[in-house]
Length: 306
Image (cartoon, rainbow, N blue to C red; front, side, top):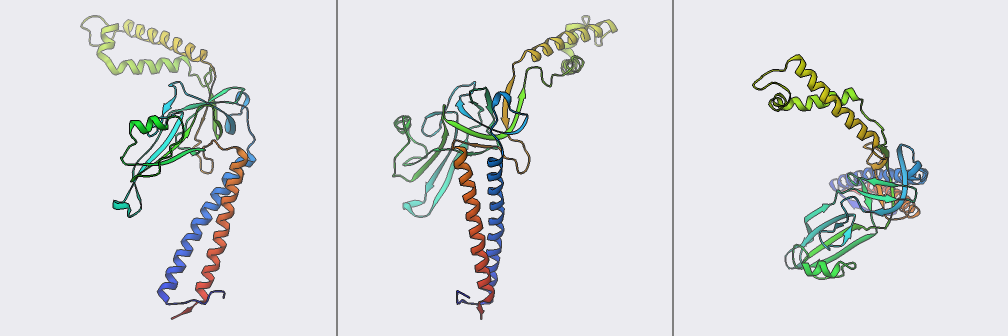
């Protein structure tokens, strides 16, 4: 057709196999990006105070968790979430970069949308952030001097055999989040007193000797009926206190990974319109690649084979 190819049979089969596999991969990623595009575009933004239980979209500003701010392991910058990696270049500048170390924080953080506060669990989330820094150095880890120098801004060093990459979510940044919303506390899902009593007795029986020493007569190896009734009454009182404590807990909103195919936990510091545009563009690029790969497959099929 457009290409006048002259190839042997082995080259033709290899080319068709590579094209076929690449088309399958492109189809997978095209539908993956389309799915995320539709989820973001079709899911209305919910207010934290009145959000329904289930898969929702919320937008708010970052508030650090109960443990305070984290410090990024490479730059030392204060943040609520980080992901980093360290790569090393081949000897004498030859060869590509090889991964030495990478890691990601798992601390929960909070976002506030003006109507309430929601805890976010970043575990198993797809996270896209604007705060991304890449710099180079001469040691496996940036020195304390580098950490101090970069704590006030993005690193800018451009030489060295080691490459450092760091992605951060900073306090007060606006965050877009799409995931499984659930409200706990406030007396929700509180166990019954009898259920709590049974759990307490089961826990106490794991240390039988201590239980005997506390409730039975000295030297006894078994409980009498009266002593066992005392154990039950003590456990009942403890259960009532635990249940009252649970009923008095305030509402707490959390956003986590739903654990369902096709419903990811998405967290981004990009705005919603930019995310929609990005996933739509990626799906379009995959479609263009599929068309180009199909065209090349046809060229291989009609090529003159020696």
